[in-house]
Image (cartoon, rainbow, N blue to C red; front, top):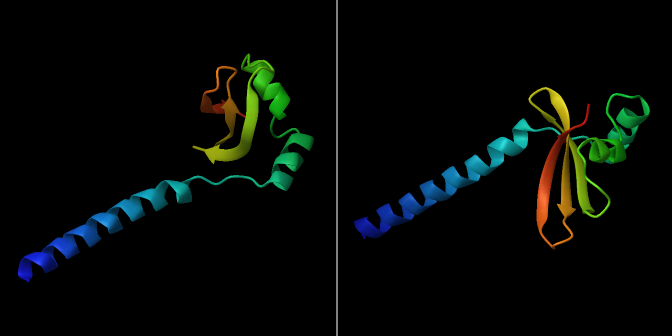
Length: 97
């Protein structure tokens, strides 16, 4: 019985540690909502998505799946999920400024 209890407690400790590790990075990074992104582009605080992609040399052959603008270390970046022409999905992190 003592062995079973210690195994359960060890499993719970590992699950708790993994859960806390997953929560930490999410809290450290703050992202703008769609309205805030539009306002930041309109005010000139950040470049438009099209301008960022063009400046990175990314042509229209990659399909954009998702877009976020997040604060990363004091600077705003676009986190862009794309599907490449060969069918691979990847995230690009490009400066928004």
